[in-house]
Length: 395
Ligand SMILES: Cc1ncc(COP(=O)(O)O)c(C=O)c1O
Image (tube, rainbow, N blue to C red):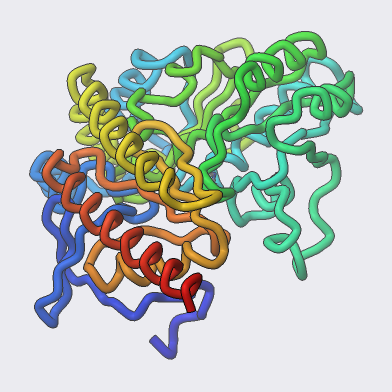
Protein backbone atom coordinates (compact mmCIF):
# COMPACT_ATOMS: atom_id res chain seq x y z
CA UNK A 1 0.00 0.00 0.00
CA UNK A 2 3.08 2.23 0.28
CA UNK A 3 2.54 3.58 -3.25
CA UNK A 4 -1.08 4.55 -2.63
CA UNK A 5 -1.59 8.12 -1.40
CA UNK A 6 -2.91 7.88 2.13
CA UNK A 7 -6.20 9.74 1.75
CA UNK A 8 -8.06 7.04 3.72
CA UNK A 9 -7.34 5.47 7.11
CA UNK A 10 -7.68 1.78 6.33
CA UNK A 11 -8.80 -0.94 8.71
CA UNK A 12 -6.21 -3.55 7.84
CA UNK A 13 -8.58 -6.05 6.31
CA UNK A 14 -8.36 -6.86 2.62
CA UNK A 15 -11.48 -8.35 1.03
CA UNK A 16 -10.81 -9.94 -2.34
CA UNK A 17 -14.22 -11.40 -3.17
CA UNK A 18 -17.84 -11.03 -2.18
CA UNK A 19 -21.18 -12.80 -2.40
CA UNK A 20 -24.49 -11.29 -1.36
CA UNK A 21 -24.00 -9.52 1.99
CA UNK A 22 -20.62 -11.20 2.63
CA UNK A 23 -17.03 -10.23 1.92
CA UNK A 24 -14.12 -12.70 1.97
CA UNK A 25 -10.37 -12.24 2.23
CA UNK A 26 -7.56 -14.53 1.09
CA UNK A 27 -6.91 -15.74 4.64
CA UNK A 28 -10.25 -17.49 5.03
CA UNK A 29 -12.02 -14.73 6.97
CA UNK A 30 -15.54 -13.66 6.13
CA UNK A 31 -17.33 -10.46 7.04
CA UNK A 32 -21.00 -9.55 7.15
CA UNK A 33 -21.03 -6.31 5.18
CA UNK A 34 -23.28 -3.80 6.95
CA UNK A 35 -21.83 -0.76 5.21
CA UNK A 36 -21.89 -1.97 1.56
CA UNK A 37 -19.09 0.16 0.16
CA UNK A 38 -20.54 3.16 2.04
CA UNK A 39 -24.13 2.76 0.86
CA UNK A 40 -23.01 1.77 -2.63
CA UNK A 41 -23.32 -2.00 -3.16
CA UNK A 42 -27.10 -1.69 -3.27
CA UNK A 43 -27.53 -5.23 -4.65
CA UNK A 44 -24.80 -6.68 -2.46
CA UNK A 45 -21.80 -8.44 -3.99
CA UNK A 46 -21.88 -10.52 -7.15
CA UNK A 47 -25.60 -10.02 -7.85
CA UNK A 48 -26.25 -12.05 -11.03
CA UNK A 49 -28.40 -9.35 -12.70
CA UNK A 50 -25.66 -6.74 -12.28
CA UNK A 51 -22.76 -9.03 -13.15
CA UNK A 52 -24.48 -10.37 -16.27
CA UNK A 53 -25.50 -6.90 -17.45
CA UNK A 54 -21.93 -5.60 -17.13
CA UNK A 55 -20.45 -8.70 -18.81
CA UNK A 56 -22.91 -8.58 -21.68
CA UNK A 57 -22.45 -4.85 -22.28
CA UNK A 58 -18.63 -5.10 -22.05
CA UNK A 59 -18.71 -7.60 -24.89
CA UNK A 60 -20.86 -5.30 -27.04
CA UNK A 61 -19.54 -1.77 -26.39
CA UNK A 62 -17.80 -0.21 -23.40
CA UNK A 63 -17.43 3.40 -24.47
CA UNK A 64 -18.01 5.50 -27.54
CA UNK A 65 -18.46 9.11 -26.23
CA UNK A 66 -21.27 11.62 -26.10
CA UNK A 67 -20.40 12.80 -29.60
CA UNK A 68 -22.92 10.17 -30.70
CA UNK A 69 -26.34 8.97 -29.70
CA UNK A 70 -26.06 6.44 -26.87
CA UNK A 71 -29.32 4.45 -26.99
CA UNK A 72 -28.86 2.76 -23.60
CA UNK A 73 -28.21 6.20 -22.03
CA UNK A 74 -31.51 7.50 -23.41
CA UNK A 75 -33.25 4.35 -22.16
CA UNK A 76 -31.84 4.71 -18.61
CA UNK A 77 -32.64 8.45 -18.55
CA UNK A 78 -36.24 7.51 -19.37
CA UNK A 79 -36.28 4.90 -16.62
CA UNK A 80 -35.20 7.61 -14.15
CA UNK A 81 -37.54 10.33 -15.37
CA UNK A 82 -40.39 7.80 -15.52
CA UNK A 83 -39.79 6.86 -11.88
CA UNK A 84 -39.37 10.41 -10.54
CA UNK A 85 -40.66 13.99 -10.95
CA UNK A 86 -37.77 15.05 -13.21
CA UNK A 87 -37.59 15.49 -16.97
CA UNK A 88 -33.88 15.62 -17.84
CA UNK A 89 -30.83 13.69 -16.68
CA UNK A 90 -27.12 14.50 -16.91
CA UNK A 91 -24.87 11.49 -16.32
CA UNK A 92 -21.44 11.68 -14.71
CA UNK A 93 -19.18 9.34 -12.76
CA UNK A 94 -19.45 10.15 -9.05
CA UNK A 95 -21.42 11.92 -6.37
CA UNK A 96 -19.27 15.00 -6.24
CA UNK A 97 -19.58 15.42 -10.01
CA UNK A 98 -23.35 15.22 -9.78
CA UNK A 99 -23.28 18.00 -7.15
CA UNK A 100 -20.90 20.02 -9.31
CA UNK A 101 -23.34 19.70 -12.23
CA UNK A 102 -26.25 20.76 -10.01
CA UNK A 103 -24.41 23.88 -8.79
CA UNK A 104 -23.51 24.86 -12.35
CA UNK A 105 -27.09 24.28 -13.51
CA UNK A 106 -28.47 26.40 -10.66
CA UNK A 107 -26.16 29.31 -11.42
CA UNK A 108 -26.81 29.11 -15.15
CA UNK A 109 -30.55 28.95 -14.54
CA UNK A 110 -30.43 31.99 -12.23
CA UNK A 111 -28.28 33.95 -14.66
CA UNK A 112 -30.48 33.13 -17.65
CA UNK A 113 -33.76 33.81 -15.87
CA UNK A 114 -32.87 36.72 -13.60
CA UNK A 115 -29.56 38.22 -14.79
CA UNK A 116 -26.33 38.74 -12.81
CA UNK A 117 -26.07 38.87 -9.00
CA UNK A 118 -28.19 35.81 -8.23
CA UNK A 119 -25.54 33.21 -7.62
CA UNK A 120 -25.53 32.26 -3.92
CA UNK A 121 -25.85 28.63 -2.85
CA UNK A 122 -27.14 27.97 0.66
CA UNK A 123 -26.13 24.70 2.30
CA UNK A 124 -26.04 23.39 5.87
CA UNK A 125 -23.79 22.59 8.80
CA UNK A 126 -22.65 18.96 9.00
CA UNK A 127 -23.45 18.50 5.30
CA UNK A 128 -21.32 16.52 2.89
CA UNK A 129 -21.44 17.24 -0.83
CA UNK A 130 -18.10 15.90 -2.08
CA UNK A 131 -14.45 16.78 -2.45
CA UNK A 132 -14.20 18.91 -5.60
CA UNK A 133 -14.19 22.68 -5.08
CA UNK A 134 -17.91 23.24 -5.70
CA UNK A 135 -18.92 20.30 -3.52
CA UNK A 136 -16.33 21.18 -0.88
CA UNK A 137 -17.38 24.84 -0.77
CA UNK A 138 -20.94 23.66 -0.13
CA UNK A 139 -19.77 21.16 2.50
CA UNK A 140 -20.14 23.14 5.70
CA UNK A 141 -17.57 21.22 7.72
CA UNK A 142 -14.55 23.40 8.56
CA UNK A 143 -12.30 20.39 9.21
CA UNK A 144 -12.79 19.15 5.64
CA UNK A 145 -12.13 22.59 4.10
CA UNK A 146 -9.10 23.36 6.28
CA UNK A 147 -5.90 23.84 4.29
CA UNK A 148 -7.66 24.08 0.93
CA UNK A 149 -8.84 27.69 0.99
CA UNK A 150 -10.02 29.90 -0.39
CA UNK A 151 -13.32 28.17 -1.02
CA UNK A 152 -15.44 29.36 -3.95
CA UNK A 153 -17.30 32.64 -3.62
CA UNK A 154 -21.03 32.71 -3.08
CA UNK A 155 -21.53 29.79 -0.67
CA UNK A 156 -23.37 30.44 2.59
CA UNK A 157 -24.24 28.02 5.38
CA UNK A 158 -27.03 27.72 7.94
CA UNK A 159 -27.39 25.27 10.84
CA UNK A 160 -29.02 22.04 9.62
CA UNK A 161 -32.64 21.86 10.72
CA UNK A 162 -32.96 25.55 11.64
CA UNK A 163 -35.56 26.85 9.20
CA UNK A 164 -35.62 30.40 10.56
CA UNK A 165 -31.83 30.73 10.23
CA UNK A 166 -32.03 29.38 6.68
CA UNK A 167 -34.78 31.83 5.72
CA UNK A 168 -32.62 34.74 6.99
CA UNK A 169 -29.99 33.77 4.41
CA UNK A 170 -32.35 33.33 1.45
CA UNK A 171 -33.13 36.32 -0.74
CA UNK A 172 -33.00 37.64 -4.29
CA UNK A 173 -29.29 36.74 -4.38
CA UNK A 174 -30.01 33.03 -3.82
CA UNK A 175 -29.61 30.74 -6.82
CA UNK A 176 -30.27 27.52 -4.91
CA UNK A 177 -30.60 25.75 -1.61
CA UNK A 178 -28.63 22.50 -1.54
CA UNK A 179 -29.59 19.98 1.12
CA UNK A 180 -29.40 16.28 1.91
CA UNK A 181 -32.91 15.10 2.91
CA UNK A 182 -31.08 12.96 5.50
CA UNK A 183 -27.46 13.87 6.13
CA UNK A 184 -25.26 10.81 5.58
CA UNK A 185 -21.60 11.54 6.35
CA UNK A 186 -22.57 14.18 8.93
CA UNK A 187 -24.07 11.54 11.23
CA UNK A 188 -27.30 10.27 9.60
CA UNK A 189 -29.18 13.37 10.73
CA UNK A 190 -32.89 13.53 9.99
CA UNK A 191 -34.23 17.10 9.79
CA UNK A 192 -37.16 18.20 11.96
CA UNK A 193 -40.69 17.95 10.57
CA UNK A 194 -41.45 20.83 8.20
CA UNK A 195 -37.82 21.80 7.54
CA UNK A 196 -37.63 20.54 3.94
CA UNK A 197 -41.11 21.88 3.16
CA UNK A 198 -40.06 25.25 4.59
CA UNK A 199 -37.01 25.28 2.32
CA UNK A 200 -39.29 24.48 -0.63
CA UNK A 201 -41.43 27.50 0.22
CA UNK A 202 -38.40 29.79 0.68
CA UNK A 203 -37.12 28.75 -2.75
CA UNK A 204 -40.51 29.39 -4.35
CA UNK A 205 -40.70 32.82 -2.74
CA UNK A 206 -37.30 33.91 -4.05
CA UNK A 207 -37.06 32.15 -7.42
CA UNK A 208 -34.30 29.85 -6.15
CA UNK A 209 -33.93 26.17 -7.00
CA UNK A 210 -34.25 23.47 -4.36
CA UNK A 211 -31.55 20.83 -4.88
CA UNK A 212 -31.70 17.57 -2.94
CA UNK A 213 -28.36 15.80 -2.70
CA UNK A 214 -29.52 12.19 -2.71
CA UNK A 215 -26.11 10.71 -3.45
CA UNK A 216 -26.39 8.67 -0.25
CA UNK A 217 -30.17 8.50 0.32
CA UNK A 218 -31.07 7.63 -3.28
CA UNK A 219 -31.47 4.43 -5.30
CA UNK A 220 -33.76 2.79 -2.75
CA UNK A 221 -31.65 3.32 0.39
CA UNK A 222 -34.45 4.79 2.54
CA UNK A 223 -37.10 2.39 1.24
CA UNK A 224 -38.21 4.79 -1.49
CA UNK A 225 -36.48 5.04 -4.84
CA UNK A 226 -35.54 8.56 -3.72
CA UNK A 227 -36.03 9.86 -0.18
CA UNK A 228 -37.98 12.92 -1.42
CA UNK A 229 -40.75 10.52 -2.47
CA UNK A 230 -41.12 9.47 1.17
CA UNK A 231 -41.13 12.98 2.62
CA UNK A 232 -43.29 14.32 -0.24
CA UNK A 233 -41.30 17.48 -0.83
CA UNK A 234 -40.35 17.66 -4.49
CA UNK A 235 -37.07 19.43 -5.29
CA UNK A 236 -36.27 21.04 -8.66
CA UNK A 237 -32.98 19.22 -9.00
CA UNK A 238 -31.70 15.94 -7.54
CA UNK A 239 -28.25 14.37 -7.42
CA UNK A 240 -27.68 10.63 -7.33
CA UNK A 241 -24.65 8.30 -7.33
CA UNK A 242 -23.36 5.63 -4.89
CA UNK A 243 -26.03 2.89 -4.99
CA UNK A 244 -27.24 3.89 -8.45
CA UNK A 245 -24.61 1.71 -10.15
CA UNK A 246 -24.49 -0.92 -7.40
CA UNK A 247 -20.71 -0.43 -7.17
CA UNK A 248 -20.07 0.64 -10.74
CA UNK A 249 -18.95 4.31 -10.70
CA UNK A 250 -21.78 6.47 -12.01
CA UNK A 251 -23.59 9.66 -11.04
CA UNK A 252 -26.68 11.46 -12.27
CA UNK A 253 -28.07 14.96 -11.90
CA UNK A 254 -31.76 15.22 -12.66
CA UNK A 255 -33.75 18.40 -13.22
CA UNK A 256 -37.23 19.55 -14.05
CA UNK A 257 -37.64 20.78 -17.62
CA UNK A 258 -38.20 24.42 -16.59
CA UNK A 259 -34.78 24.63 -14.94
CA UNK A 260 -32.77 22.29 -17.19
CA UNK A 261 -30.55 25.23 -18.11
CA UNK A 262 -27.49 23.36 -19.42
CA UNK A 263 -27.09 23.26 -23.19
CA UNK A 264 -24.43 22.06 -25.64
CA UNK A 265 -20.97 23.15 -24.53
CA UNK A 266 -22.09 24.26 -21.05
CA UNK A 267 -21.07 21.10 -19.29
CA UNK A 268 -19.87 17.62 -20.11
CA UNK A 269 -18.09 14.45 -19.11
CA UNK A 270 -16.03 12.13 -21.30
CA UNK A 271 -17.16 9.00 -19.49
CA UNK A 272 -20.55 10.27 -18.29
CA UNK A 273 -23.38 7.97 -19.33
CA UNK A 274 -21.19 5.50 -21.19
CA UNK A 275 -22.81 2.21 -22.20
CA UNK A 276 -21.09 0.13 -19.51
CA UNK A 277 -22.18 2.43 -16.69
CA UNK A 278 -25.68 2.60 -18.14
CA UNK A 279 -25.93 -1.19 -18.25
CA UNK A 280 -25.11 -1.23 -14.53
CA UNK A 281 -27.73 1.42 -13.71
CA UNK A 282 -30.33 -0.35 -15.81
CA UNK A 283 -29.71 -3.60 -13.92
CA UNK A 284 -29.86 -1.86 -10.53
CA UNK A 285 -33.06 0.02 -11.35
CA UNK A 286 -34.69 -3.14 -12.70
CA UNK A 287 -34.27 -4.70 -9.26
CA UNK A 288 -34.68 -1.69 -6.95
CA UNK A 289 -37.48 0.22 -8.64
CA UNK A 290 -40.14 -2.34 -7.72
CA UNK A 291 -42.69 -1.63 -5.00
CA UNK A 292 -42.29 -5.09 -3.41
CA UNK A 293 -38.52 -4.63 -3.21
CA UNK A 294 -38.81 -1.15 -1.69
CA UNK A 295 -41.42 -2.38 0.78
CA UNK A 296 -39.05 -5.12 1.90
CA UNK A 297 -36.29 -2.49 2.37
CA UNK A 298 -38.67 -0.51 4.60
CA UNK A 299 -39.61 -3.68 6.49
CA UNK A 300 -36.00 -4.77 7.14
CA UNK A 301 -35.15 -1.17 8.04
CA UNK A 302 -37.98 -1.13 10.59
CA UNK A 303 -36.84 -4.43 12.18
CA UNK A 304 -33.30 -3.09 12.46
CA UNK A 305 -34.34 0.32 13.76
CA UNK A 306 -36.74 -1.07 16.39
CA UNK A 307 -34.14 -3.49 17.70
CA UNK A 308 -31.46 -0.77 17.76
CA UNK A 309 -33.81 1.49 19.69
CA UNK A 310 -34.30 -1.25 22.28
CA UNK A 311 -30.50 -1.50 22.59
CA UNK A 312 -30.07 2.27 22.76
CA UNK A 313 -32.57 2.40 25.63
CA UNK A 314 -30.00 0.46 27.72
CA UNK A 315 -27.20 2.98 27.08
CA UNK A 316 -27.48 6.42 28.70
CA UNK A 317 -27.52 9.17 26.05
CA UNK A 318 -27.60 6.75 23.09
CA UNK A 319 -29.73 7.57 20.05
CA UNK A 320 -30.87 5.86 16.86
CA UNK A 321 -31.41 7.88 13.68
CA UNK A 322 -32.23 7.27 10.06
CA UNK A 323 -34.71 5.73 7.68
CA UNK A 324 -34.94 2.48 5.73
CA UNK A 325 -31.51 0.87 5.53
CA UNK A 326 -29.57 4.05 6.32
CA UNK A 327 -29.37 3.98 10.10
CA UNK A 328 -27.10 5.24 12.84
CA UNK A 329 -26.51 4.17 16.41
CA UNK A 330 -25.02 7.13 18.26
CA UNK A 331 -23.23 5.88 21.38
CA UNK A 332 -21.05 8.90 22.08
CA UNK A 333 -17.26 9.30 21.89
CA UNK A 334 -16.41 6.81 24.63
CA UNK A 335 -18.55 3.81 23.69
CA UNK A 336 -18.85 4.10 19.90
CA UNK A 337 -15.19 3.25 19.11
CA UNK A 338 -15.36 0.25 21.46
CA UNK A 339 -18.57 -0.98 19.85
CA UNK A 340 -16.96 -0.53 16.44
CA UNK A 341 -13.97 -2.67 17.53
CA UNK A 342 -16.36 -5.30 18.88
CA UNK A 343 -18.20 -5.48 15.52
CA UNK A 344 -14.94 -5.77 13.63
CA UNK A 345 -13.72 -8.58 15.91
CA UNK A 346 -17.03 -10.38 15.36
CA UNK A 347 -16.76 -9.95 11.59
CA UNK A 348 -19.55 -7.40 11.11
CA UNK A 349 -18.50 -4.39 9.05
CA UNK A 350 -20.02 -1.06 10.02
CA UNK A 351 -18.68 2.48 9.79
CA UNK A 352 -17.66 4.80 12.60
CA UNK A 353 -18.50 8.44 11.86
CA UNK A 354 -17.36 11.43 13.85
CA UNK A 355 -15.98 9.06 16.49
CA UNK A 356 -19.45 8.90 18.06
CA UNK A 357 -21.78 7.09 15.72
CA UNK A 358 -22.00 3.72 14.01
CA UNK A 359 -23.45 4.03 10.53
CA UNK A 360 -25.26 1.01 9.12
CA UNK A 361 -26.00 0.73 5.42
CA UNK A 362 -26.19 -2.95 4.46
CA UNK A 363 -26.93 -4.05 0.90
CA UNK A 364 -30.61 -3.44 0.12
CA UNK A 365 -30.76 -7.17 -0.66
CA UNK A 366 -29.68 -8.14 2.89
CA UNK A 367 -31.78 -11.04 4.18
CA UNK A 368 -33.88 -10.89 7.34
CA UNK A 369 -31.66 -13.65 8.77
CA UNK A 370 -28.56 -11.53 8.14
CA UNK A 371 -30.24 -8.56 9.82
CA UNK A 372 -30.87 -10.77 12.87
CA UNK A 373 -27.26 -12.01 12.81
CA UNK A 374 -25.92 -8.44 12.80
CA UNK A 375 -28.30 -7.55 15.62
CA UNK A 376 -26.94 -10.45 17.71
CA UNK A 377 -23.49 -8.90 17.32
CA UNK A 378 -24.73 -5.42 18.28
CA UNK A 379 -26.55 -6.89 21.27
CA UNK A 380 -23.40 -8.71 22.37
CA UNK A 381 -21.50 -5.43 22.05
CA UNK A 382 -23.96 -3.54 24.24
CA UNK A 383 -23.91 -6.41 26.83
CA UNK A 384 -20.12 -6.18 26.99
CA UNK A 385 -20.06 -2.38 27.21
CA UNK A 386 -22.70 -2.30 29.92
CA UNK A 387 -21.01 -5.07 31.92
CA UNK A 388 -17.73 -3.12 31.75
CA UNK A 389 -19.52 0.07 32.87
CA UNK A 390 -21.07 -1.77 35.85
CA UNK A 391 -17.72 -3.25 36.87
CA UNK A 392 -16.13 0.22 36.67
CA UNK A 393 -18.97 1.68 38.79
CA UNK A 394 -18.50 -0.97 41.52
CA UNK A 395 -14.69 -0.62 41.58
C1 LIG B 1 -24.64 13.31 0.17
C2 LIG B 1 -23.34 13.09 -0.57
N1 LIG B 1 -23.02 13.91 -1.59
C3 LIG B 1 -21.89 13.76 -2.29
C4 LIG B 1 -20.99 12.78 -1.99
C5 LIG B 1 -19.73 12.60 -2.80
O1 LIG B 1 -19.81 11.43 -3.55
P1 LIG B 1 -18.50 10.79 -4.22
O2 LIG B 1 -17.65 10.28 -3.12
O3 LIG B 1 -19.05 9.69 -5.11
O4 LIG B 1 -17.85 11.86 -5.02
C6 LIG B 1 -21.27 11.90 -0.94
C7 LIG B 1 -20.32 10.85 -0.55
O5 LIG B 1 -20.30 10.34 0.52
C8 LIG B 1 -22.48 12.06 -0.20
O6 LIG B 1 -22.79 11.26 0.82
